[in-house]
Image (cartoon, rainbow, N blue to C red; front, top):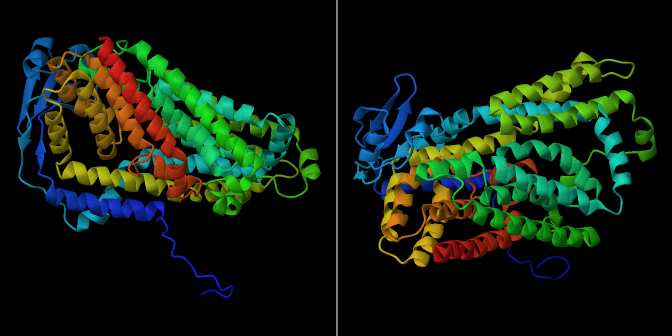
Length: 516
């Protein structure tokens, strides 16, 4: 009994991101003792020798001429030009080559070893996040955030949802066109303080950025990292089924914007409605940049601060341009951000009110250190995938899944395929990775039930991304860690979107099958 006379109820608390990933690492290690090991033969293209390289399950390597005839012999229905042009770089599974292997159970040391090795593998995105954090720290120290934010919130008063609408639509477009996901992390520092100033909570921030971009990626139209590479691996042109995906993307955009409108209006009118209300004070303290006297801050919005803010904002469209048209990846993006960070550090250090060399360096280091947790989360998630891959059980699950759909009717086949990709999305959270591993195996099965292969590609998109809204092995945990949001708060918000994607996606898949 408490002092008030009320009996305290036991409340089950969801563990934090690090604990969840630690538990999943242990589960993955245990799975390598239980799930039979096995592998398909894998096919790669050697650019230097211009040869196809087949690596068999037991490790034997065979080199073949890089011709379409050789691919046809292997049963790999992919154009040889896709390998030669660099369109497909990951190892491709060869159909009908699965073999059981000697069990490869992970040792107890793999629990910590995978964490270390996963972090090493994720070093490119970690460096990007550190540079991003340093850039944020310097801009905050300059005072440009506070002044600019006050000016923006005054101009948008009464039309706050318009910004959420624009951000969500742009993120959907980024997802469907070029697969912006990890890159979306860069947008939180510039948008979250604005959303806070407008009266919204952490969930609106994640919804407008991560949720919207992931919905766009789930309904990818020309995204090279999802539908294009999956279509190539399935042996079809990515334009097949395009109109179905465009229709789905339009409906998905309407759904996510409507859902955000409903939720944001509820939070705006009644802040205690927020699913993350219990943490709103710590969240605001972490991200709000407008303390103190607003009039004083507004009056100090100098030309120097305006230039700093413009330089900070311009880094993001440059990043999007680089990813979409120049093939940038995290090292190049980090270099771009660092270039602008150095300029901003110079502007912040100099002048009559400058912070000096030590001030800006300390601000950069402090900003980078604030995102150490986010970076480690990404590394730990990669470690789980390493355990599964080293244990050679991923292909076993793929082989078992392919056997489930044999000799089914078209509609039943495609719905089971959706469920299979939902499960595989947890095991292989990489969209391109799952595409090249599964499509050469799964896509030909569509021929046996007389349905188009593009339906399997669409099922892969819907199934995997419905899981990636939930899977701790994907980007979810890094996003939640960055905003210090509890996992169960996110689950409460996102489950309707998962249901929508599975139900609407399932209906769309059945329609594709029935029409064809």
